[in-house]
Amino acid sequence: MGMTIAEKILAAHSNKKEVTPGEIINANLDIVLANDITAPIAIKEFEKLGVNDVFDKEKIALIPDHFTPQKDIKAAEQCKLLREFALKYKIKYYYEVGRVGIEHALLPEEGIVLPGDLVIGADSHTCTYGALGAFATGVGSTDVAIAFATGECWFKVPESIKFIYYGKLKKWVSGKDLILYTIGDIGVDGASYMAMEFSGETIESLPMSGRMTMCNMAIEAGAKTGIIIPDKITEEYVKPRAKRVYKFYTSDPDAYYTEIKEYDCSQISPMVACPHLPSNVKPARELSHVKIDQVVIGSCTNGRLEDLREAAMILKGKKVHPEVRMIIIPATQKIYMQALKEGLIEIFIEAQAAVSTPTCGPCLGGHMGILARGEKAIATTNRNFVGRMGHPESEVYLSSPAVAAASGILGRIGTPEELGL
Image 1 (cartoon, one colour):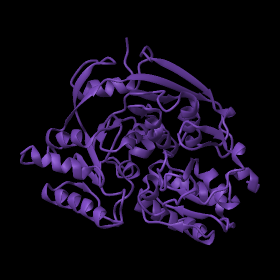
Image 2: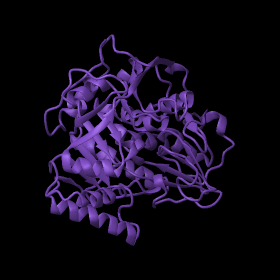
Image 3: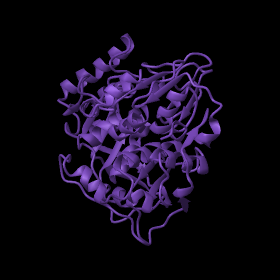
Image 4: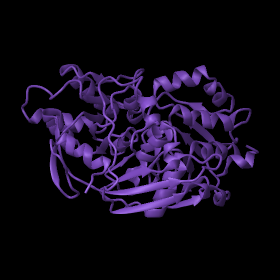
């Protein structure tokens, strides 16, 4: 029996010829990641271990992105812990405000995470890096503390589900719509502790930004990771960025999958996840009665340059509805700079949107756009649980940048087609 790409990466990093689902292994890590919320816990636990140094100064990434620029004294103290730890142990991949970006956009952009890598992060959306053909997953801060010291982590080899997407995408349908549709189909526990392998002709033609969006939200289906077999599109993205050698893995033709699901993407329209679950999905056209107060375009899910371009196509020459506030957050400084050069930021400001420095901000109810009681937001973020973006009696709807931008103009959930686009 052959192995899936996920199994091959785990086998290679645990010095085994093969691994099987359910097997417990110990594996060597390529990158260990933590942010300003999760790293302080890991740092405190690491200091209790009594070791003299971290396992590798070039394999740890500390990214203060959630509450930065620091929103209050507590956030400032958290970030100070990261800064001091990074300086003490000479951590190579530490990024201060002005250089930092949202972690899951920043690390691929900088060529720090690469195809074939085994990555753990004290953040559930670490699974984003599966878009590069890496096995990446979120873990607890205590696991990260041990990894800081040893460079290793234990895993239970996950079962794999294969998702095959075929058919031409309709206009304004993107990777966000595909993953929302998928989660709507299988549910928030439909892939619990499994590897979601995304494949098929539609995926093969999907840009890296769309692939990252899909792998990013694998966790919203309960998955251990989302992963895509690397190809020419991957190579074009990775080659100019890579800081070290990488390896493309593939799945064997006779690899075993717990389940195989197929979707005709030509039948998928722009989708929206309604409160309070990412699986509560409906076509955007069915939600025109939902009035909104806020739009957020950004996050580790949809704050990339392609996302900003999509929003700008819709906002150009138009104005945000007078009763709506729109917040746009480029995911990294490089994305921000390129958006400036392309005139996207000018389009946003002329449309009367607010543009923020890179931060996770409102996605987790941190800052830069918190909702009051009874308010409704449509966001390109990844979660819409009760109180996720603010007051427990607020509501969050999840969508693509295209639907979010159109909704911001209309003052209610809507689609670009309603604007004649």
